[in-house]
Length: 239
Image (cartoon, rainbow, N blue to C red; front, top):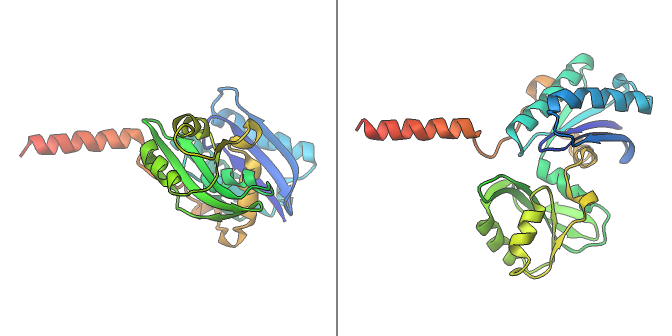
């Protein structure tokens, strides 16, 4: 099965083409340009370089959240556009689960903590048990404060392998008070489309048509949070 995957949930953007778990091609950018400028041309160039036309792709995959609201929307929209053209089934996967796939095959026994910086000393996070390189989810995707996550990690009583763009923040916060905290090296730490493809291949039975593919947010966008706060204040003042 050929899987074309897109990752645009944070600053970097990447795409990957895999077949039965083997990476056929991949590409990525982290230049500061918006994903709307770089993503589709990057996918098109990767497919041309791999000599694989879009019609030969069996499954489209995208990191559907959590993450940057704009980045996630752009990734989902790109996959929808590609899928509509050829009626290719789509899978939206957890960004955090895709990041945790960095530990696939690593001889590590402990807990993989996937963390994305959600600002204001909060992280999007999920925990995965890892035994001999095999992952199993322990907690759902959540938005937690660093203090809340620290308490959870302290109760694990296992080595902690930190991945994601929030991993360094967590390492600097927890390293002095939680034993066994390991910061993943940069080539394994950050979001990659190959991880999205690996997670999607394990969830191919959840594929949907392009019109049903949706982003997944753990909290409201900042603009909407601020609007609701103003509305709440206005309602309170009117009483």
